[in-house]
Image 1 (cartoon, rainbow, N blue to C red):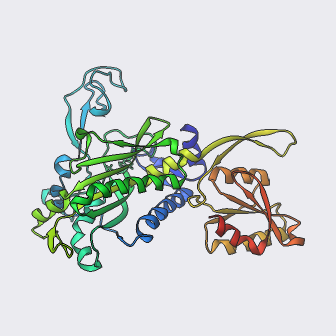
Image 2: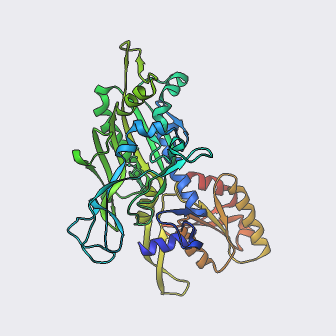
Image 3: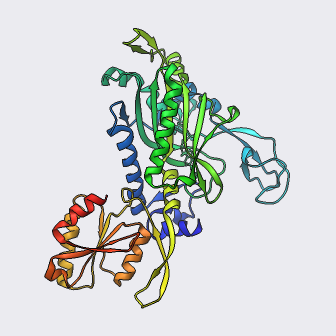
Length: 435
Ligand code: GAP
């Protein structure tokens, strides 16, 4: 993990938040390559969940909502973790991650307060008066924005159940304990689908989504041996869930742990919002001519957590030959799925020669119209390859002196390090076919 964290900083993927002020706990910023990787993850999720389907529509609801939403959803009363404090050094921990019999990990004493339930929502105020009446919260999940818009979508989009509403957006949780890099943070993006279905069909749809979501993680490139399902025991489930299954990843810092959660939220949320708001959120089913409150199946995954799994799974160290004959060195390479790679290709003139630079910049300009590509002329070509390996760039396109005669370039494959010679005019199609 130390090597990965250092690589992600060195190559501009992830920076600690507010770093020049010694940081802020559990907050990270995405650098230029990180934002591309995150965007690509969101793009493949949206494509699979919304664009390619006829039964899912998208939404972008607000982070700030009426406080009543959180009262009704149960988050004000139940979105809590048990907190204990060391009486000696006043460090606070989540009781469920630390047995009371153990000593304080900070000072070594064993003198704990009783546990109390700590609400994980960040409180804020709307408008200039800061009193209880103006209080609200930063959303801890995007799902509630979907539930309160359920009526609007049914009225405007001619959807028929089963159908889904998908949303990608920020969520905020004042986690008691943070750590393990992007795994548990206080501000993160989530990709959530609420799939509304007939109560009698909910169990079948749950299983369908469970399998669909596992396939998605495998398609991202995560190795099967690092993925598994885990069913929640009844005492473990969120307050709204009748059934929950996690897709777990085998994290190097903690072993198996949640990557994505799939929950059967039943009619809990729509029913509660109907009752509290007085607005009827039932659905008129043409087939049975009855009004029903649909059940909801919810697959939900954090962008940062998916990104961390992808980075861990693609980080590779291997022996590679150097420019010196017979010698080898350790090559660090992020073997990212080309669809996710921040930089799709790097265009390199072999040396800083005006004629080579002109051709390389021409290729760069053309590819830039469709993909995020990079032009790089700094340092030896071997060093430039290593830099791109660490950034996970799948293709390096090198312009050499032969290019002046044969109008061709070499394309180096990141993983096999094999080189193809192809005509310059074929480069865009070559990249298109590979990505
Ligand atoms: N609406 C459902 C929901 O909020 P969750 O299991 O609490 O369910 C969904 O969160 C996903 O969000 C998790 O599977 C995880 O990928 C991500 N996530 C949750 N808390 C997180 C945190 N503190 N830091 C990073 N990601 C988090």
